[in-house]
Amino acid sequence: MSVALNGKKILITREEDQAFEFSDKVTKYGGEPVSVPLLKISCSDIPGNKEIFPSEEPFKWIFFTSSNGVKCFFSFIDKYHLSRYLENCRFAVTGRKTAQSLATFGYKADLVPEVYNAETLAKEFLDLKGRKEPVLLVRGNKSRMVLPNKFKEHGISFRTIEVYETSFNKSATEDLNRLLQKDDIDFLTFTSPSAVEAYHQMVIPHSGETPVVVCIGTTTEQRAIELGLEKIITPDDFTIDGMLKEISDFIEKG
Image (cartoon, rainbow, N blue to C red; front, side, top):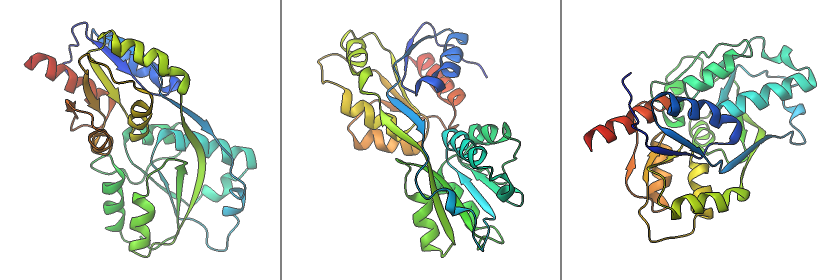
């Protein structure tokens, strides 16, 4: 992959623990990363979660839509010693990074969609034989309703478990606006609809030029459009590497 960022300043809005890899890659390709985490992610143990597993009809599929979900789910599993319920499960994930997170816990993704989003994951799952088997959806408090709605529509037996909470990092408001008002940022990156929403809530309108907005996928792009952002570019490859290649191509085109 040929990527050259030519010293451009790239604002990374990911949650702090997830920003390091992104920053390292920006530096590697000759850009200047500026990290302002707009979100906070924390694992949560909702009352009743533990009772989801000891059921007469064990889950055959477990769905993850983010690496955060994977990490917090297995923290929950370890806390209550529930790994025995995973022995005969198959796993579905929305993308390659989530599959890699799953692999760190010793499990292989059985279904990774061709396009990394929940809509495609739902479609490919519904095309499978045996799709009537019980499903567990691992979610956060801000997770979208694409999978639950599709499963209801098609009569799939499923339950949900909420294992993490996403909240806006209000303490980043001052840093965010200071950078934007200085017109010191070339590209503004978003890796989730929640990050776009946090930005929209925190940003103070100013007369300067808005940076080019880079979204990791069509779902994030659509939320950015809905909230009035312009000059949006979105890679075909819904990954950090794809975002950086898209920025590089944009720079090259002038």
